[in-house]
Length: 156
Image: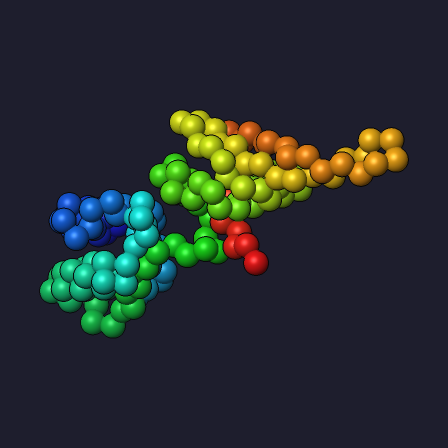
């Protein structure tokens, strides 16, 4: 069933309205709840989510894949969701990330660079030099395959 739904999404993403949009993930919860997350290089709109929802809903109603009673949610991943795709990291350059690795304290800093297999965040840290407290920017390089998760952290 997931493959069929993914094919529906991929077909719709080919339309002009969805230029720059991409599929992030899907969750089927139980036998009556479907959550679909889309994103865009420039930000997904309510109209795009609505059009995708109606497209999928029409097929679900006709084919009865979830029966007559189901819940369908199409949205962007939102700020609290972990980044899943390389493309999401590129989109979020300049924003703060919280990066978690197994067994280590989370690192929060500004995402400044994204490469094929790594990304770099920078953050201000305090050091003591003699009797003086000094603040310096420190860069941290992470490999995508070595992190547990990374989330965008809003600035206040």
